[in-house]
Structures are given as structure tokens and as C-alpha cells.
Image 1 (cartoon, one colour):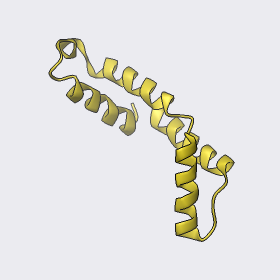
Image 2 (cartoon, helix red, strand yellow):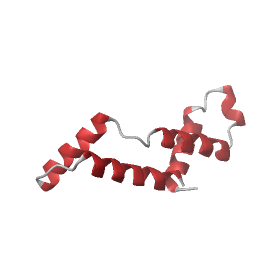
Image 3 (cartoon, one colour):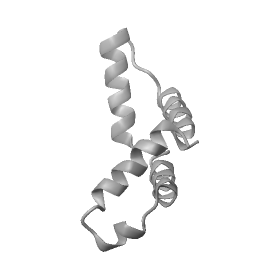
Image 4 (tube, rainbow, N blue to C red):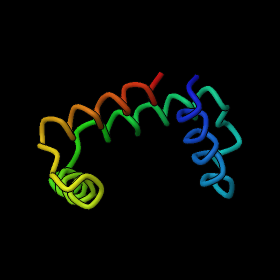
Length: 82
């Protein structure tokens, strides 16, 4: 379980702490839910791509293209899902 999946799983468990179903929620079940949530974020939104371009301009003086920003984001998400 990756550190990101573990963080998300613990967050799920804490968020459900006051809900009856949380009693049945094990870390492994929460990790499966976390992986699904992380997978759902794999495709960056237009707003995310624009934010990456704005950041790149501010940091490096030139904007990163959508393909580069998307590829970088997807690589990070793929690593987080492990």
C-alpha cells in the first residue's frame, strides 16, 4: 500500500468515524476505496491544466503544455495508486 493510499484510507476512516458503517470499515477496505478515489482523479480537469500552466509560467517563465502537464499528473497518480 502506497503512502498516498494509506493517507487517503485513514482520511476515509476518520471521515466516516461518526457513521454506523465505519465500524465495518477496515484499513484494507478503506484502501480499496482510496484507490478508487485516486483513480477517479487520474484525468486532470481543464482548471488543473490551466493551473499547471500558470505555475510553470510563474516558476520557469514559460508555460507547460497540456500533454506535459497531463502526463506528469497521471504519472504521479499512477504512483499514488500503488
